[in-house]
Length: 519
Image 1 (cartoon, rainbow, N blue to C red):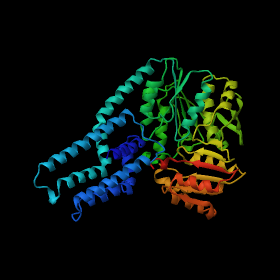
Image 2: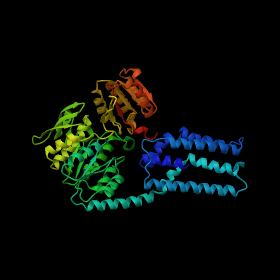
Image 3: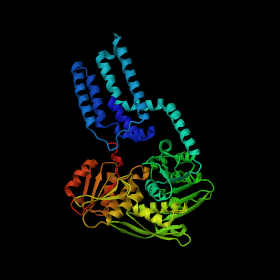
Image 4: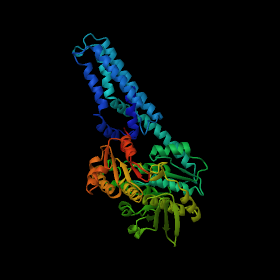
């Protein structure tokens, strides 16, 4: 039961401690074989034809086996034992122990037990019942702790706000978007570091508590620029972060069909992302990516704004455009065209139109902050690929790996496949479970992904069952060779399949792996 609590809290953490998201995950997992074993053991204990001592012995053996299997199981994202996790764990354990003691006391001092069962049967049965419903105990613990978490969060919020108020010369740059914000953050950090002392939110610390933690634990008095990545799962999330950090500049990298399960409509995504622009002061500066329809069609009147793009068809209203883009196995060269005759040639190790777009946004901010062109060129040329975001590596065996495994989206996956299509020395192989959190459009967009796969790849390995049918339907539309399509249950199986077909000169694209997080 203790290990079940650990697993349930682990999954709760993966779902950002949000009970609605956690419940949605549970509805898919609640009928798993793992839980059905406990149900079978419970029925065994209460089988009237079986001696209770034998039943308990069988239960004990089954539980020992399960404990061994739990310790063997590996997760791609292990549970992080934060103070919040320990609070939830402690309350869950208290509820479980208190309930069990109550059952022992009631059965131990009662002569007439229900339905004629013995005290051992009822106590062990109750333990199994709590094991089956350990997720419910964890959810109850979260509800009980709501006032405590609010009080703690408020304390941390006030501390972070006090630190930021004390730094009157700090320039805060907010970055948000359906995708591209983390890469843009890294690129901007590298360029601005040529002249400023920069702090950026690390990793994916793009929630209010992540930003608060960054400020409280990492902000130094000598920092002059704070680059704040801002994520959102529902309306108001961006505004909440802006109310804390008060950005003077903002970048919106994209508005697309991400997190439609929580946002419901693309218009809600748009209004949430533009909460950053709406929060900027009158003398602020907004940079907006016009390659996305719901960025381009959103007027901005409260603050100075400039538009940028990579796609020539969207360049009409753009002051900054990336032109003459040329890809090679070693990177990309392109020219930034801008106002006042600006024409800046840049080279980078990065590949893919999405990365050029993210670089362009960073360059616009750098120019605004007075970074000289020669320093921008030097910084852009030295930027390393961000891990899991269209990064390219070579194996000792001569296989090229394109790692785009972080949180795939319709625009990014298409660009990744276009990059893959340019590698023609050997087989072009994609490994993907498809895209998630796309709401009602999930099947439609994953079918479109399948069509792109058929156009750009020689071999496709589809992982898991989340989007399998939709992707396969899209692949089959284009007459893709059936022998080159593989369906596997997990990424471990995909690796086994790859080991049998890979040869020197082949290229493998890993496109998204998040649906496998919980396995």
